[in-house]
Length: 313
Ligand code: GLV
Image 1 (tube, rainbow, N blue to C red):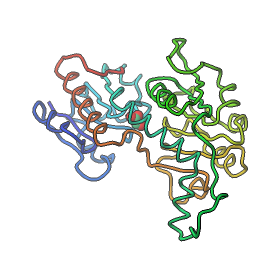
Image 2: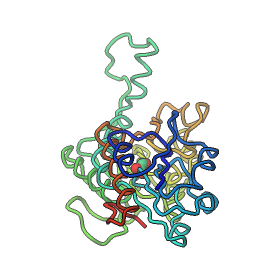
Image 3: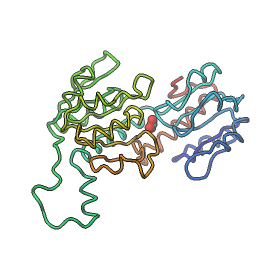
Image 4: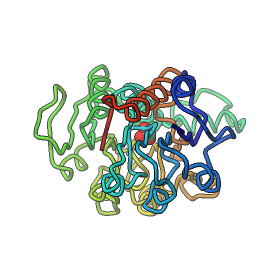
């Protein structure tokens, strides 16, 4: 059986796959371009990919023998799951192994955004630091503040766990009625009105696309900030630019953006109160290897008749 890898995976993933299958894969930097997919998908039984490959009906048409798609990410918004279901293609993903690392990223963004670290780093780098200054780059406190988590799933819960160490009050929205050990479940409007830091940890769905629009940004406190570790399109980017320019909110700290990648000339990048990372949420050596290996295990089980450790569809 042949499997196609759209990127060079870290850890032992390739070795695991090579022990069982004929492996073809994109070896260059980044990820497989459309021409490579056109060349390899016609013979592939398995596709090992990540968020950079839009798995559409048209792509599936290229792959008549495809039986399993293994996504090396927890989010699967790049995959048309209905089209996969119609063709009987199983889909795996990588939940759990990245939860704690992504929660670390969210917390780093809360701290860096709130305490204006981007501006501080620029200040030193630009040679403007001449003396200690009691009034320099004063930010907002994180400890004892109110954290609003939009989406209390696995990652949201891990963020709330960290917030306890900072003596923060946690409020959250959740689709599920089930209570978590942390904080108080509220409606989105109350969360936006009360939180000092709003963290987005929802999956991207039809319902969450554009969730944080101009009205919702205006509903936040002018001293509050927003952190996004979910997907860029959860925030309406133009509205966020206006919110930061006009002081509707104090800061934004984003691991994900819309569009992604964000062009170097984008207005968000010119705003001192906005900090942008290139989608590094799960990017620790341990976690990226664990994701790659879980994705390999999903593909192996899916193609050899076993139970996929993390099947989403
Ligand atoms: C990364 O964004 C993921 O969904 O794992």
